[in-house]
Amino acid sequence: QVQLVESGGGLVQPGGSLTLSCAASGSILSIALMAWYRQAPGRERELVATMPSGGRTTYADSVKGRFTISRDNSKNTVYLQMNSLKPEDTAVYYCNGGITTREFRYLEVWGQGTLVTVSS
Picture 1 (cartoon, rainbow, N blue to C red):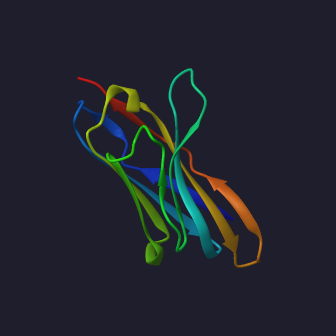
Picture 2: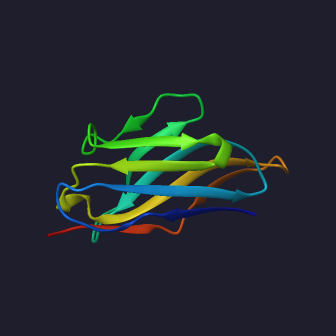
């Protein structure tokens, strides 16, 4: 079994910063892609940033220049550094991973989500 666990969400004032973490655990052989999505109240889930293994990162236009995705392969962990936060960044943030298990199964795995609230 493979799971992703996010942490780091919370309440922050506009203009502030937060760093989200997502750690993968379980029977992992390799992780091809890790990504962050978010879902604001009453809206559909949207892609925020992606980081394929050895590939180029991508960002939603709404977060370019403010958010940075990074990963530590030795820890099977992906991070999302969020700067200059705006109230419209308020959402539940989800980690997503494309993971090959030691049993050679490819799984798309989601974390449980972590709430980020940007408010004064």
